[in-house]
Image (cartoon, rainbow, N blue to C red; front, side, top):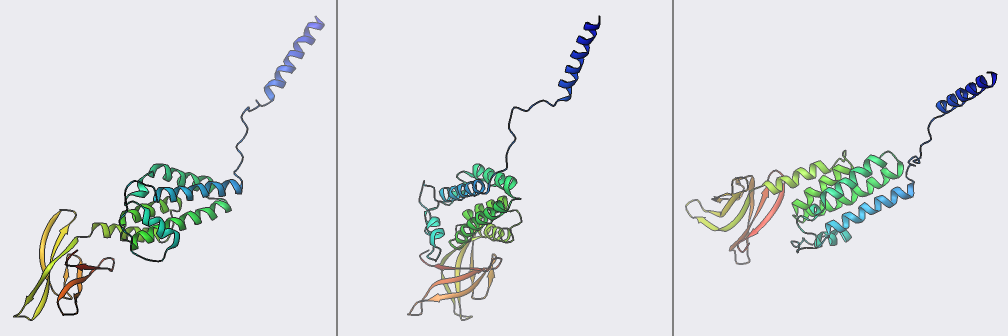
Length: 242
């Protein structure tokens, strides 16, 4: 009987010991990424931006000549919708990088580099009048860096440029009674796709534009106009052959 009691006690002690010990987790704990790993991941994103922006499939509209180094060369090769070629994959990479590494010093450094890369592309695209590319680049800036100070304003300007009416110069009309030279233009509204003809003089505002100048050749004949879109302040020169 004594041996039986000792056996029961031993079993109970062993059971208590097993219950008190926490179960061992077979899976190792995730270790934080090292600075080198964060830099490597950031560089992969930078390379991805380059590849998407310059990805093949169709020719791009010619970009205006301007200094810009690699960014300008990249833009020259880009298609109008190039940044939308792999939008979800790139957006996911940007969002994941910010969430996983945004609180680390190396992560903040790489976020600054990625934001700068995208903003350079957005600014160059805007100057080259590739407004859809500019919009897409600004959107990606706001994914990786939601508090970026300049991206929202540039995005708004690009959207306004996309929405503005399109102007076509058709000719000129000389009002001899008033001694005025008028420009004859067709204005097409994107939201309705309606076109209307207008005759405007220098200094007159029409459809959100102002006619700043009538351009004349060496013989004094009118050959073009210089108009300014009032919302953005961007000027545009139109010729009769445009």
